[in-house]
Amino acid sequence: MSVEDSLDKFDKRLRQQARSNLTKNGSNDTKKLYDSFKSETKVSKNSFSYSFFMEFYGNFQNEGVRGAGGVRKTTSKFNRKNNKGKLWKIKSKNSRFKFGKSGGISPKHFEGWAKRKGLSPFAVAKSVYHQGIEANHFLDKAFNSAFKTLPDEIVEAYGLEVESFLKFAINKK
Image (cartoon, rainbow, N blue to C red; front, side, top):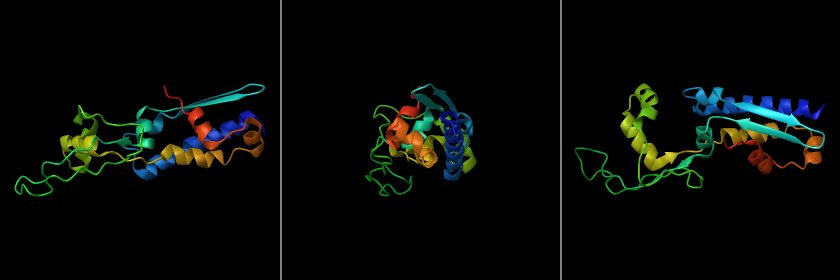
């Protein structure tokens, strides 16, 4: 099997697994991220390049976003002592992405999802801003699974390692 054929097989498995992971995690709400997966492979005599493209917020879904934190004022209009002073539970503490302390998130991004769930988009936006977005590692899991299907000859010939190949393949544009 040639290098091109092996990389095409790797690419097909990666995209199929990433889409499957998004669907299983319930993160495929608008299908925009699901449909945005594209890749590009170039093979020359002594090297190859593989680039994987997706919507930018796919990185946020994969790695999560650290919340801004903060203190709740209250969770009840009628009982002012209810949960007052408790910290928000911050998700994805080790993520390189973070919501800033200065602003918030526009509720327009959550309108469709919040209305389907019967929630206020403003409350959802505030909660996401304070708590962050939990990492689901849909792409990392798919990449590790697809990497195992690459023939050993290619892995040894090009000196590939999972972490370095993942960083190399994900295009930051």
